[in-house]
Length: 438
Ligand SMILES: Cc1ncc(COP(=O)(O)O)c(C=O)c1O
Image (cartoon, rainbow, N blue to C red; front, side, top):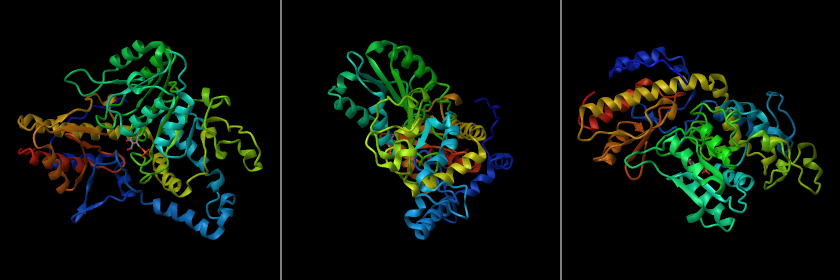
């Protein structure tokens, strides 16, 4: 996205002025910000677990009340006080429009279901189908461990040796992130041996936002399919999965989507696959055509679109929390979120750069791409000397970040609930920990 480049000043007054001008500043009040001392923490862990909205408990309570009052009838009866809400039988339908907006899909191409790693496996059942020479998977080196395990065990499941069939891409010497041209060159080099490109959308460690459109086009040109793990991308960056012709994707809802620990995942299946009932899949009763679901007949007949990948009935309590969070995304929209994210992340980057300029010995190095189009909210920082001690000082000062072995501090200023002042506090404490003042 394009955004006017802002001239920053390293002062608290500047941060407060930006908060005063911020059209999304009031949205922060819709979240429970964890306390720190007398005040609030500066919470930069939305890339790990997003915060609870102030309406989440009401949404969950409502389903608990329906369960208490109606028992099994809650599956089919609409509640008199909220007739617009779907009963549990069709609860998942309340998510399609919102999720489609978030990932740039048609509503039929998405569905909310299961957990992320489970969905990765289920989607690979459909879309990783090694055949003859075409049996390799290409991914980024250092992918999130769950994805590594999923890819490795999928290959083994097909009787393949990951050492020969898993292509992992690593940055050039001395660099931390991948160049798109190198990714494309490796896809072309794998050529007709390549069955699937399966990568992150936004990389969990470096925060790099890959060029999904270019990667997908390269995979297709070589006769392979392309799927993405959008755990760090959904609700963070703007996506156009349908137009980019992505074959499939999955995500979790507990990071930028603020839907609670272990929150329900979701999938995208491009309509060209989703509307083809012969696309292979593992089936369960919830993916069967809805009109026949309770006829208890033999023979699976998939529902059209992504809904045909559902297996089990909806985990309603976790989905109620998801609905509460998605209402905020519907209200604010990704365009406004992206505008603020770009500014807030650039502000954090600017403060780190001020510290780099003042303190060459402990120079905190940003390994996340500098170009706004190649990253989301997260900045990953290496502090070459005493990184862990710096991280501990930030924590003691009320900044919630995370530490990733061996030497990376990850922080994500989340546009829905972080303020420019939060980022200022982070910068001030980081400067202090590095022995300089801002
Ligand atoms: C990139 C990525 N993939 C997969 C997972 C695993 O998710 P789950 O435990 O929901 O399957 C995570 C969890 O943080 C993740 O960050």
